[in-house]
Image 1 (tube, rainbow, N blue to C red):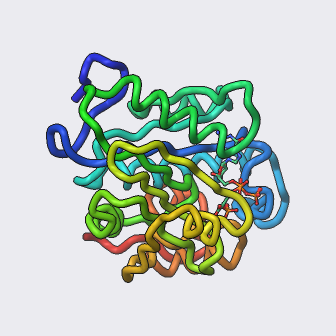
Image 2 (cartoon, rainbow, N blue to C red):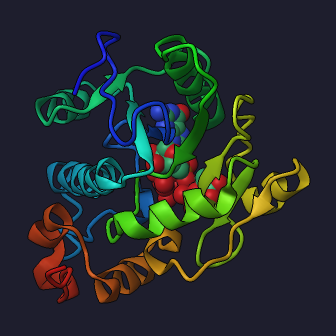
Length: 234
Ligand SMILES: Nc1nc2c(ncn2[C@@H]2O[C@H](COP(=O)(O)OP(=O)(O)OP(=O)(O)O)[C@@H](O)[C@H]2O)c(=O)[nH]1
Ligand SMILES: C=C(OP(=O)(O)O)C(=O)O
């Protein structure tokens, strides 16, 4: 359901979190996964399709979560933006300010401007969570309970989800060692048993773990044969 502001609203009226999902230009993203979708050949078109599939599964799961009100993708890749918009996903380009944290701050600001004026919770969700289950994302949002909070990746060093305190700015510190950086910024570490939320995929090993958890449909279509597993029926 639209709210007349150009950003899709979902979830309970006036409640829920607004998530920014950042994606680099397709041919530069997920560099350690080049070749994962085409048996090591490393074709740029196959790689772009893989990054797109990972992002589509992540965004679809986030949009299905009942605690998620809005999802906004920040990407300057025109092909990815067109694909996402065709699926009804809201997309804005990066600002001239370079880098992941600048993109996240920009997305959070746009969500704030397009909001309904009520103080909400803004967050950042990584775009490479192809096994993400909406119920695990909901559980993490509930556990945060309006506090500044983050979910570490399965290695414990990175961050897959950052939630600002209700009504506060996002203040993202993504990058190497972001889990420690977010903890140092006062964010509560969310450490529930949410394997799909913690499984971002940077390497072939990560992809194998995600496949064991059950990949979403787009990633399964691209990787099913290579990884051998898909999400069981709910
Ligand atoms: N919009 C936007 N997204 C970014 C930018 N830099 C990184 N991202 C995204 O943020 C997430 C984490 O980024 P990185 O760890 O730097 O890159 P990656 O694509 O995941 O993987 P590597 O190539 O292995 O470093 C990924 O979803 C990226 O696509 C940026 O400048 N703008
Ligand atoms: C940028 C991050 O993710 P990645 O694991 O993709 O490097 C991060 O965890 O802060």
